Length: 85
Image (cartoon, rainbow, N blue to C red; front, top):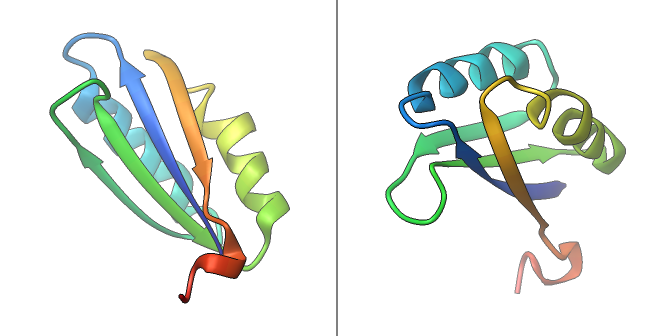
């Protein structure tokens, strides 16, 4: 299973609306996810998992990154060979 962590920076005060939009997008997709607002350099942390790595890349690139009020993202794909060490 492929897992990705996506860190999002958002416009000030838009965290909740972005989280709601992420949830709406991802309930339409066949992926497992967790999304939470956080304090620190980033505003939102998103964890995505799927059996299809290309699908994850597509969702992140074509859906999540294009949400209005998302200023920037940082995506980290888990090294699958090390996931169960």
